[in-house]
Amino acid sequence: MKYREMTAEQRKVEFEKVSAEFEAWKAKGLKLNMARGRPGKEQLDLVSGILSVMTDPTDCVDGDVNVRNYGQLSGLPSAKALFAEILGCKPEQVFVGGNASLQLMYDTIAKAYTNGLLHSEKPWCREEHIKWLCPAPGYDRHFKVTESFGFELITIPMTETGPNMDLVEQLVKDPAVKGMWNVPKYSNPDGIIYSDETIERIAKLKPAAPDFLLMWDNAYCIHEFEGEFVPFPDILSLCEKYGNADMVFEFASTSKITLPGAGVACFACSEANMEYMEKLINIQIISYDKINQLRHVKYLKDKAHTLELMKKHAAIMGPKFKAVTETLAREVGPLGLATWHDPKGGYFVSVNTLPGLAKRTLALCKEAGVIMTSAGATFPYGVDPKDSNIRVAPSLPPVEELQQAMEVFCCCLKLAALEQLK
Image 1 (cartoon, rainbow, N blue to C red):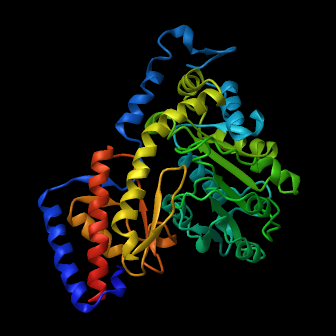
Image 2: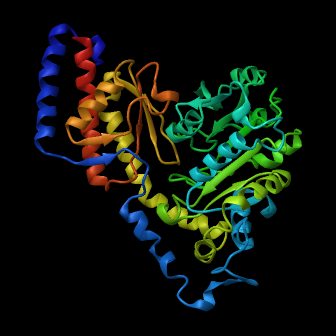
Image 3: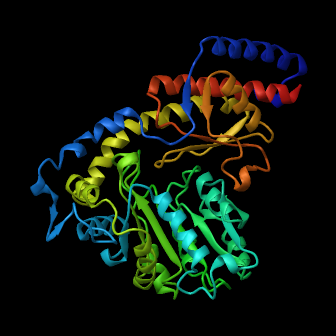
C-alpha cells in the first residue's frame, strides 16, 4: 500500500518499524561510498594488461615518431585515428590530450573567456553578461565549470528524448546565450539517449550569438552494459550539414574504458576550430603524454576490439545496475515514493523521489554510513527546485556491498517520507 493511502495509525506502525530498521543499519557501522561514478577494482583489474604493452624502448616508436620526445601537439596520428573511428569523425578533426576530458572542457571555456572563439567579436571576459544552457538533471562538474566563470546558468528540463528543444530554440535567440552542455548518450544521471530528432534540432540551431558553443560531452559513447552497442550520429558532420561546422566541440575519453587516472582524452571539432585552438594550446604546452597515447593504441587497437573490451566491462556493471533497480522496485516502488530510469548504459541511475525528500534521505544515508552524491548536485548552482533528484552511482562497490547500500537507501527514503507525512 502507498504511504499516502495509509491511515494515520498504519503510518505510525510503519514509522516505528522503519525507524528500528534504520537504527539497526546504523549499528552496523557501514562505510560505503557511492558518491562518484568510479570504476570498481574488478574493472581496473580487467584492464591491467595495459600496463605491460610497452616494455622496451623499441615499443616507443609510432611510425616515424619517437613518443618519448617533444612534438605532435594535437596527438599521435594513430591515437587521433582511434578516437576518430570510435566517434565517427575524421582524424584531422581530433585533438588528443591528457587523461581528463574535463580538463579539455574547462580549457575550451577558459580560452573562449580569455581569447574568444573563432567567431567571437571579443573575448568573453569583455562581454557584459553571459548565459549558459544547462540540461538538468545533469553533470555537476559541467555546471561548476561555467559557474566558475560567472556565467548565468539556465536550467533546461530534460525529457525522455533529451533537452526540451522548444525552450532551447527560443532561448538561443538571445545573443547573451553563448552555449549549452550536453551528454547525448546515456546522459548523466538519467541515462537518456538523445533522439535523432533532438540531435538534428540541436545541429540546426541558429543562435543569435555568432560564437555559440555546443559542448558535446560524449562520455558514454560506447558504454552499454545491457544489449548491443547503440550507434550514434556524428555531431560534427551534422552541424556542418546545417551550416554550423564551427559551433560544436565534442569530448570523449578512455576514463571508463581503461584507467580513469591514467587514460587518454580528446576533443573533436572542425578543421578551422582545430587550427585556431592549436595556436592557443601551443602557448601552454609542447605536447601531451604520447607514451600513454601509444600505450592505449596498442592496447585498444581499434573500435571493434574496444567494443569487445566494453562487453567485459558490461558483464561486471550489468549485475550492479540490476541490483539497484531491483531493490528500488521491491522496496519503494509499491509505496509510491519514487520513480527512476532504467538505463541500458552509462554509469548512473537517476531516482526522483516525491518532492521534498532528497536532502533528508541523503542526510539519513550519511548517518547510516552510505555516502552518495549530494542532493541538488544535478542542477545548476546545486539547487533542485523540487528537492527530489538523487544520482545513484553503482559502479564502485562490489555487488554485495551495493545491495547493502541500496537497502539502506530505501530504508532512509521510507523514513524521510514517513517523517514528512506525520
